[in-house]
Image 1 (cartoon, helix red, strand yellow):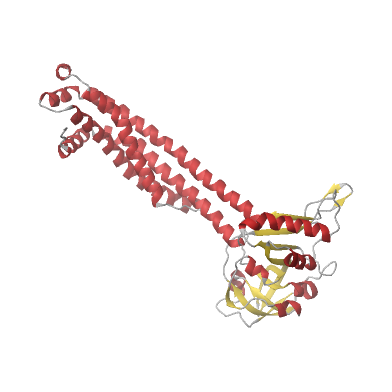
Image 2 (image 1 turned 90 degrees about the vertical axis):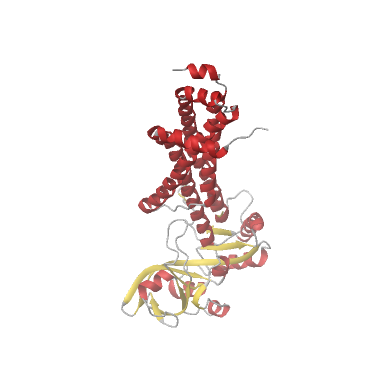
Length: 411
């Protein structure tokens, strides 16, 4: 049985590294940069992935958006939404006749000046129903949401986003107060919880919601009775998204009397799937960035191997003396493996400090979200240790094969 004196081997390895401090420091540089790069790249990628997840949460889950269709004028096909083709009846029909759909929120809105006392604020005013808030998982911070009575009676009530409240009311409780929208008085019945920015970068809290019928009859008017600008549709589950999209297409084609060879006069967009695809892309990019950064770790490992090979050559006489006084083959191998491992571990610790610092600096300077996870730190540090052992083995193996007599004669 081979008995190896581990403490003695560590002591000899540390002493050998201290003799060549500058060389040891330069040897660890590749590992430091590699570990730091891996941690930084994973932090940036994970931050981007979480940001997209927050976007998905902010719009609600399992969401479809239905827009009016396009128009053709003089042979030129205009963009989607240039023709008003959706009605409140379409939204009610989808809610009633599409089994895969749980909520439908029709939308009609525009930009208007909202006035309270001597304060005013220009913002988006959106007419909708309570399904908007259930479909998008949007809760009321204070007050209440619309009810069926508000919609059926075209009541002059409104819900305010946090940004509007901050700019109009300051520290005053807005619930129960009266604001004027296009000189029409509205009673504030509630304040919505903060949502933050939308996927397009817009402030979702800079909005006023009123009943859809109030928007149609008393604020914006319509080109024809029941006209709406778009609708949010929530499927019952992620698995039902495709079924809901198919049911909406079939139902609206039937209601709008569209022939088999005619194009739809509406557009259905699966926003959740688009954002989830973006999230998957961000995760793949994170892995790609981590893989690219890990190449520098391999470069650092090759640097360790080269330096250890030089060290074997320079210390040939020392190795011969150790063998002459009784050192075994595994003693020599272990010494050089431990030296390589120590270099990579020191580089790993310094690389962690570099990676964490770099991530914070990137976040502060560029405003990019960065998330440093314990997994990425352990992964980078563990990989640096594996690199040290892997690239330290060949120099150690070469050193252990030296002939003691020839080693003692080496000058």
